[in-house]
Structures are given as structure tokens and as C-alpha cells.
Length: 80
Image (cartoon, rainbow, N blue to C red; front, side, top):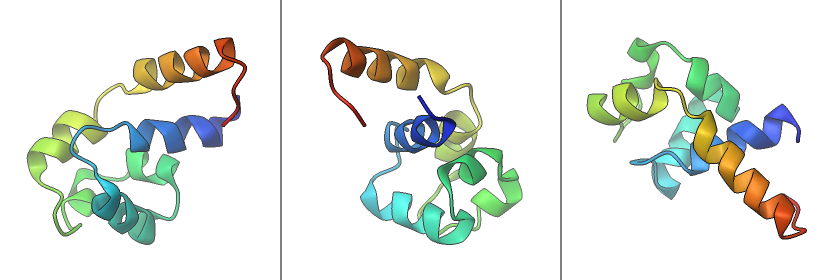
């Protein structure tokens, strides 16, 4: 598993981040990893991203859901 895939999956699994917000975040920060390491002040400048989602979902430990999904994918013989 590359770290890059991990962060892409983590962002796509983030509650409150749909396709439009996903695109806005990537337009601003360029990579999913940069989204997770962005300062709160910068995150809150994104149209449609409220403080609840930013603090509760983008600034929390997020690895378990991504690891679980990648593990299940691997058990099924799939690739991402």
C-alpha cells in the first residue's frame, strides 16, 4: 500500500465530504495528504466546509477506516 492511496481513500471516506467538497479541497490543497495536514484556518476558507466537519472529521485520527477498507479489498484480491 502506498501512502498516497491511503490518503486518497481516507479523504473519500471522510463523513461530510461529498464529491463537490472533495474537489474543492483538492483544488485548494492539491493532494489529500495536504488536506489532512492543513491548518484549521485554511480549511475553514473552503466554501461549504463547516467547522463541525473540519474539526470532527478532517482533524481526527482517520486511519482505521482506510486500513480496514484496504484490508478487505486485499482479501478479495482487488486493487486500488
